[in-house]
Length: 236
Image (tube, rainbow, N blue to C red):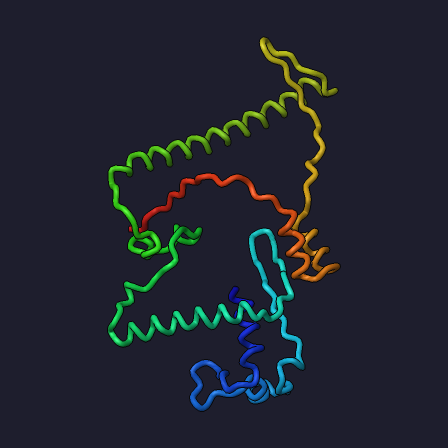
């Protein structure tokens, strides 16, 4: 929504004195005036004479991915103005003393970065019930998870040892019989999976971003809802 809002606002306010750079003093300018002053780039006065597109850059440990182009959307522009009005009214109420900052609405829920935030102890996102008697159960759950992780590591180590012994005992790959069990190492083909990133890239190239995303949304299947336990450490 942020990207849609930015490019939609740019198109809507293009030729109005609504732009400036940082905390620069002086009157606001139109976008073409600002671009000419700051970068020496000339733009037409009418936003309809230019192509406005936005792209998203997603960076993760697995790689970098571009999605887009996204184009201005009238509905998203209206939503952006609506939310901006809400934020402005909240700010006005705080400045006038009608409301305190503690009364501002905040997003509820959990974010992966919350575990490392040094201010999560009294963060309003986690406002709720205090139940210190649950600490023992949560400690027990954490202990069991650690035991499970250690057990899984031991299983992998034991399997690696058995594979090494099999190669030494049965160089031809025949079954090896112990007392009550037999075993062998088999070669298995790699799993065949669908590269969704490559598929999306190909669809975007052939159909365009919006049509490709619409197509993908129709073929994805959503599973049944389920409950998930979220446990997050409280910063001291």
